Image (cartoon, rainbow, N blue to C red; front, side, top):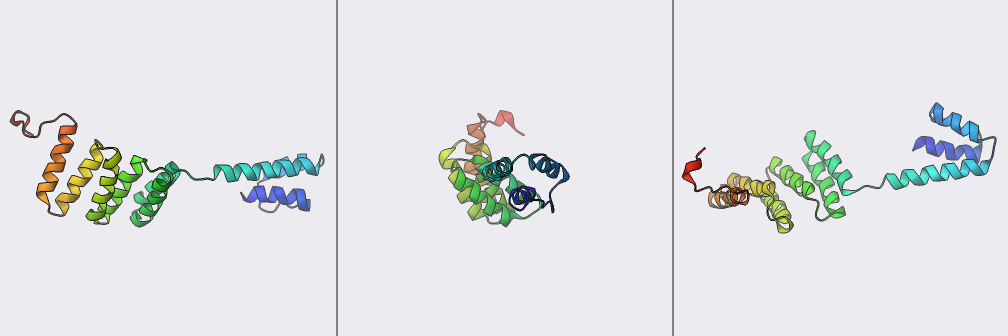
Amino acid sequence: MKWMLNLFGLCILGNNRVGMPRSHFIISRILYPYSFRVIKTVSIYLILMTLLFSCTSAETYWQRADIAMNQGHYAEAIRLLDKAIAEDKFFSPAFLDKGMCYEMLEKDDSAIIVYNQLLSFDPENIMALYGVGLSYYRLEKYDEAISILEAAMKSKGFNPHDSSRQV
């Protein structure tokens, strides 16, 4: 972005190359003798393209949140995941990761709420069912945990009461 501003400054001020990479300075010097109009057009185009591609999407916020999660910054990840969900209300990975962040912060009540939001539009999401069951288990609500985890197993075709398939 800085080199684009310098290129834009070149068309207005002339010979300003401070902070501009050498390759961009060479390109600007090639264009410079021909026309200020060409340089202005290229500069404005480059600035507009940078602004266009710097727009964030739900997936971009999710990727940034993933980096924050890997570094142990769960509160920051939750903030980024909220932005991802605001961009796309049905972006399942953001809900899953947000639930996991709450689990890591030991806020299992909040994790259950997030997982239930995901289950409201994706009722057979096995990871969300597992997250709810695990959170209930951590809250020592064992009956709820068992029923949710059994529902998760049944959604994948496993009968939890089948004694012939003991682990």
